[in-house]
Length: 144
Image (cartoon, rainbow, N blue to C red; front, side):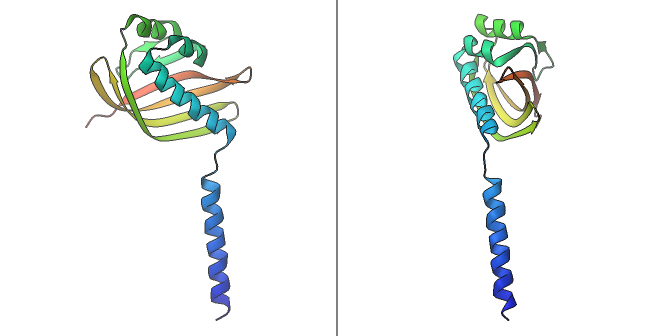
């Protein structure tokens, strides 16, 4: 009978440790999540100066329609109002790291150019000269 309380205690400690480990957020992850929040704010505010610093020079930006933009063409579309973001709501955000590369996946609901787009997106970040930069964006529309 003395073994049962001991085993129960061991399992309790193991589960508490596992839960504590799952909630740990590392500095690189926090940096990427902050950039993601700033990206959303920049699109809604049309803050192209921030986007210029966030995107790599060879950015590949693929829209849910299949249209592909470069850094220059995408930022120009925001400057001219061709792409006007009203809001972006996100959930199910996950960040994974592979050396100096971070992959972000997310569910989002975009309100852009008076259209509402239910989608998932993937962002690829690379660390260049000590700073995280977005190198690729791909949105996939969720058809219901």
